Image 1 (tube, rainbow, N blue to C red):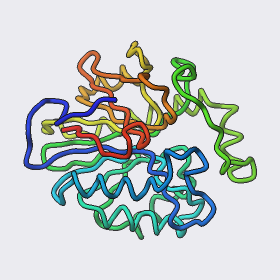
Image 2 (cartoon, rainbow, N blue to C red; image 1 turned 90 degrees about the horizontal axis):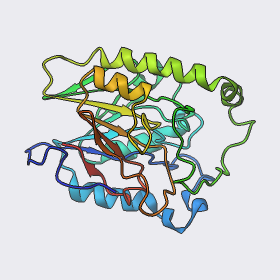
Image 3 (cartoon, one colour; image 1 turned 180 degrees about the vertical axis):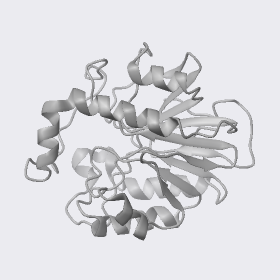
Image 4 (spheres, rainbow, N blue to C red; image 1 turned 135 degrees about the vertical axis):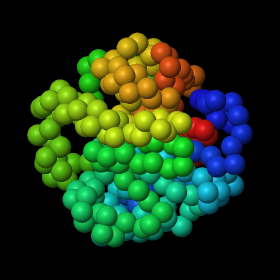
Length: 264
């Protein structure tokens, strides 16, 4: 996996970090991540320890989805409060397992002040502009050979019937998400020194061959795209990297060993 002092190789007084797929469950009792293997035991404690060791209050932290296992906003409140107590300003997008994320108006009414959301908008922080969209599965590229897939024991058809219906129209969903990506990135300030995109699903294959999502990132002059979603990556797989001016960083928390990675 890639780590370092920042993609542009210089030090800053204020840093940008990324860590995704937190899969927190402080508000629900029956969704502990250790069912996916011993590597996930006490994963929240590992995240917190590394976060507090690395991140300062003046830093920015990007969280590209799959934040909480909660089904309802009131159950996700404990997870959002846990994130709020950690240092830094946080920016999040929705992941495919964030069932609690429904009405943006309702979320904003209870969202802790250190947390900001990307949903058809953009976020500006000092000289950094952040936009993005969740994306979705696409036949353009596949990671099946690089990931040891473990079906989620928490998912059942009765949990989210809408998602079961959506699977029949995955290409339409992906097309819609691309439009949402364009809408968000169009709102990035032209004066921003650094332009960052967040997606939950990977926007490109591990071979970095041009994709529809990658083309949008390039057209909007994105410097780095942070994403997650992929777990149980086989040893030595999915390094990603830089292509055509965009650097691609996989930040699923188990992939980066529960330690936030430096973006800037």
